[in-house]
Amino acid sequence: MWFFKDRLFGAVRSPAWKHVRGIYIIDHPKCEICGKKGKEVHHIHPVHLYPEEELNLDNLVTLCRRHHFEWGHFFDWRSLNENIKDDIQRIKNKP
Image 1: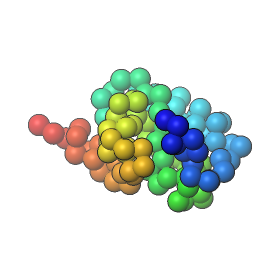
Image 2 (image 1 turned 90 degrees about the vertical axis):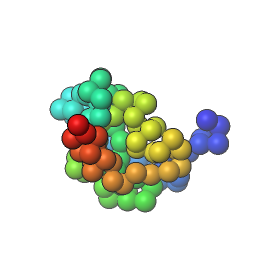
Image 3 (image 1 turned 90 degrees about the horizontal axis):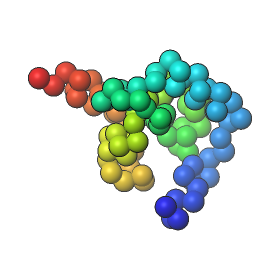
């Protein structure tokens, strides 16, 4: 998307991010919603608003591409779901 040239909204990524992401995805390889292989590591509290939370493992959740867009951002990359962990629990506990 050309209008999201800078998805970090001006935030600077830590040089340690790739390493932390790699460790997290090894420990959490599947989408926490559907169980398929997840390739997206979603920050619950976004980096551009909470840069101090970028490397916090408790601030991360693995999602597949579909669920990252659907549940992590409510079908709009500019939107944020800071309650994703609660939503995941509701989805998993659905009868």
